[in-house]
Length: 190
Image (tube, rainbow, N blue to C red):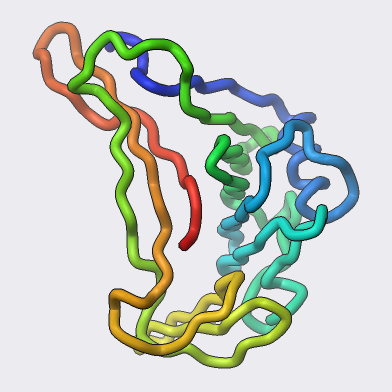
């Protein structure tokens, strides 16, 4: 594989990964500024927690809907994504602690225009909007799955439901010439 086009990927060690978790939990400053708005998506052993950065602090679904959203901690965390238009920080639990990476757009000129980054929008949980409380809305998809999204959601057509913007980065295989997705990051919720 040649280099990934259009992005920069930086590994982060356990200490910096823990610093990001501490930042989300309000115990430390952010290791780097991601701008505003910023979002959080955390997968834990026992569910999903969304969050949003507002007024210099994180608002987490786990503080609003405690019965639905797990509180992120190093013990239950599977994967934590903190993201904005600037970059995405991805933290995951490994056998020896937390690990992570930061993925951001590159300012370097593209060498292979067929590898330009591509954005895609994905529909978030849709079907039924429930209780709205402290900036979060409980939503369900009709199968029993529920999440607390970090904004007001009102029922309507599928076009009106919130979406997650995802950016894909590509690389070309030197031997086959094929182009494939090699990295993906979350960009925004809208």
